[in-house]
Length: 66
Figure 1: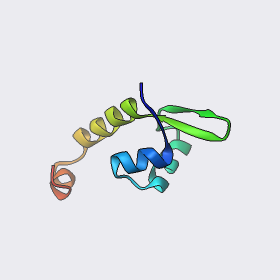
Figure 2: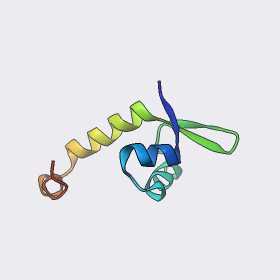
Figure 3: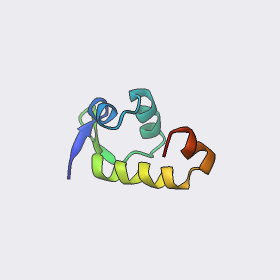
């Protein structure tokens, strides 16, 4: 398993840190706290993103070029 900080996750997936932090506060990001730092399970996060992308409306997928 690969665990990344929110900042590292943002760079790896090309998503704004703010968006990941918002998702994390809503309980939508798999991971854990170590002290005050949150570590994201990168593999499960990627699976979650792919599932969300597949369920997105066709017009939205076309808009992002997929």
